[in-house]
Image 1 (cartoon, rainbow, N blue to C red):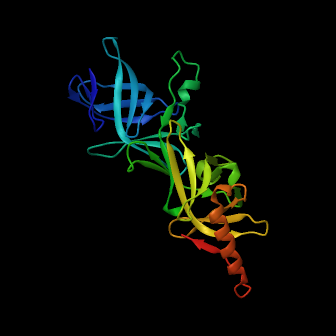
Image 2: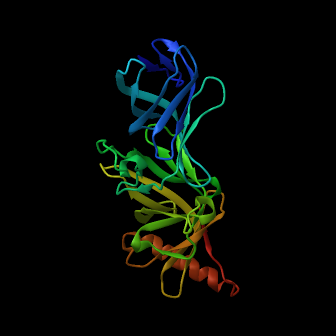
Image 3: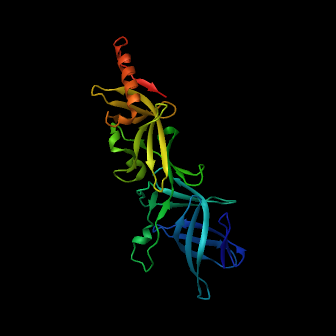
Length: 289
């Protein structure tokens, strides 16, 4: 009988083995023991991914030619590496840690969840269609312009992606934020673009909120501070900043139609902007925090 504990220690018929897990190029989770009464090697397909757990279905043929199958629960932590790839770090009580690094490209579904399809499902193998890996959570922004995906169930488990927000202007009515992981980091010529969809709204504190719908009546807001100005066309232009006042790159343009539910805010911004421009003839912006 094959078993596993919460620190991913594999045992065979009650005897602990010294071995390691690794991920093959075809996304099979593989295990091979180094010592023990009986050598053990098997591969497994992914069944389900959770915030700190990876369930895999293994199949192993013993020396008596009897095939054993079962489910193993691997404990660990999800993260993203410098190239934007998904990585599952396995828990270990001692020794060097092990990582399962997924080399394929992931994407976002309509609920903004991270979705990855193991490569073996695309091969002509005699296996049933497997479930894709779906990581449930929500998006936010941490220091250093890092786009961050917090896994559902724990604010301490998250994946950080290094890159940059698109430069230029964002029309608020299109309701999208684009984040570019550069080609040099992803080993793909065009890099990888992450697109988040939502609605831009003003808060009562003059923050600019980006409200995202995750389905099932789940909403989450990414809050930005920024410097505001009213352009010659009467549009409010916000240069996005993080909590420390550092520029994030893009500016958001909100038209009067978009601001129809925030008429009071629009009038106050317009009045203050005119006052700023008339003060000594100097160009100025409105810092709203």
